[in-house]
Image (cartoon, rainbow, N blue to C red; front, side, top):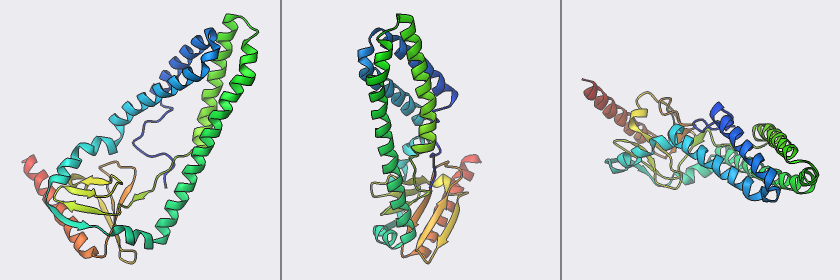
Length: 255
């Protein structure tokens, strides 16, 4: 399990820090004039940060960048299809236990996040409002700037140490198919891998637990793909066939 998924925008890179600093200055100025509007101002701040993060994610997250190839995989001829991988996943107690631990950890992180937000609002209502109520306009602005800077630094600690949204190292769809252009889950997991990333991928088989695990370095996906099946030999044969077909396409396009 990974602590911070690759491909997602780092909330503490220089761009996000600069944007946050500008927004905090604006928030401080607005609240120094209208301190009663902390809730809508803070919600607006969160929405703006989420919007900017979404745009950055769309540009940098390989899972989103690769989605344009899903249709290509889907429309290609199906060479292998597994509809009952879910039953094999449930028999892999080690994998199931990891999923359960992950769910508990993420639920705990979500609870901490909710509690943290509640504390922020309570502190503002019962402490900060009393402080800014008896100072000058410039002092209000200074207090808000200090408050948001302190809050930002504390956020770094909270989100890095306490709130850790995690995901599985290996994603296993409960049903999937392998086409001439790659792998595509047919459940709701959204797992897929284009054939061009299969050429240099590391493929590991586990016959005891009946799965094939694919670690593609070129796709930069934050997880490996684990394909469960009772017919491992057939799956490996198809994967190697797809790799050969893709290699021929790449060689013909280079020539």
